[in-house]
Length: 438
Image (tube, rainbow, N blue to C red):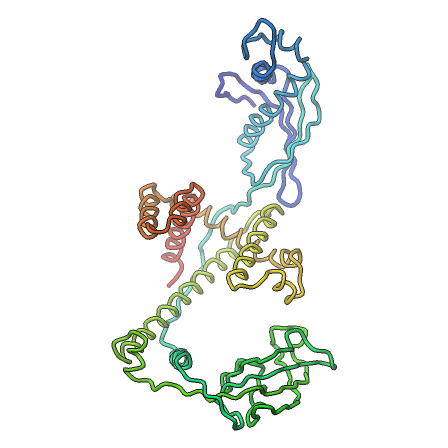
């Protein structure tokens, strides 16, 4: 194959292509001594700029003089990297190969006056042959106000403004109790089953079903032992569905005096009156419900598209990279809650490597979603204009004009690239929703 090189000479390469398992391809490329000659000349000049050669200024010695000074093998070795870079790119173009990650290069033959032969192992960028929307339809659900959520939020506000009055009577529903707790199975304490001065609000049912009922009537200083069966769907799989022994000692019992739900209560929270407060809460809950439904419909749509379309194999390097990104996201989320990630792993009884392995299916799905969006963008000409990107950056700069740290981050090239990807994804999502979501 003949390629016109940008430096004015031609390269005629002998390339053999071998498909490998797990989304890899192997190129074996041979460069003749004649094709290698321009690279040798450039390499010689580069060498002469760093080697003192009597009678010549740096970079001005002739090829024969440089060869005599440093040896021909040295020039051939120096020329190799540039020759591989150029010929590999050309071979990839010739064979319509798109890759991800760095290639693995193995030089098979490098000897002066002989053909150069090297082998490149490449990770193939996954593809979809033809993106199809046929038969895919997603229907958004009608969203209404969840009255139970509203009442729960109102109660939470009441509780935040409530007064805790220490009492000497037996506990009843609506009270707060502090207790020492031990939960064991077969006389062995379960993980997280020991606590001191644990606060429990009776009637909120935030603990294992039946637990709070056993506390009713107990007063400060009372102890009680009772059996408790964990739900079959309990999040700690090692105790789910099992019978446990509970032992509690009550430290304190508090009666919660809740403020009356009236205009004074609302004004204390910076609202005009109670109707204004309730209206604000309703609006917030509706917005959250609509956003949640929008996200659910988007997820259903993307999942359907992934199922509908056929993807080429995904190379391990991409899955490993995405799994590590997911692990980093989890670490950041845990850190934001003020929890040590090592403690978090200890609680899960898992290692980072085990989590990475568990992330593999989700990582594969996320990669397929990214490939899907990339192909749709190409097929339908969905792009982000420089003006759009500039306007979005300007908006962010205006928003954070008093935050120098945020401004510095926004002005970095990598943030511009990140924002471009966000805007592109939004446009592609809008395009898809117009076609699929009803």
